[in-house]
Length: 110
Image 1 (cartoon, rainbow, N blue to C red):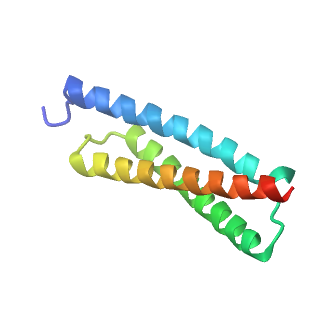
Image 2 (cartoon, helix red, strand yellow):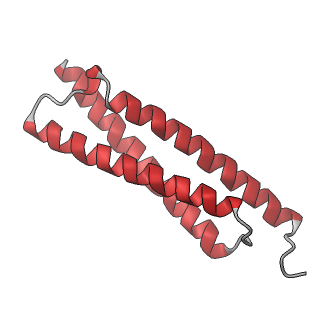
């Protein structure tokens, strides 16, 4: 009986899996945009910011992938897992905000 999940846990599990999958797809698109010619760094500060964004984006993508794999496994959804997923979402939104700020600056320079 302990391994059975309740309908609420199942919905949370599915919702988080779908949300993480979408974030991973959007993150891939954002990293592709970051590597486009329109976002090439023009100043030393922009180059440093570009490298930080690239590194943070790649690590976040890896973290999201690991979280999706974890949710696919035979685990029971818990508060700790939910907290980890929300932490990933916060990091994703912070990355998104920083990327758009960088892109705005890059467009001005081009």
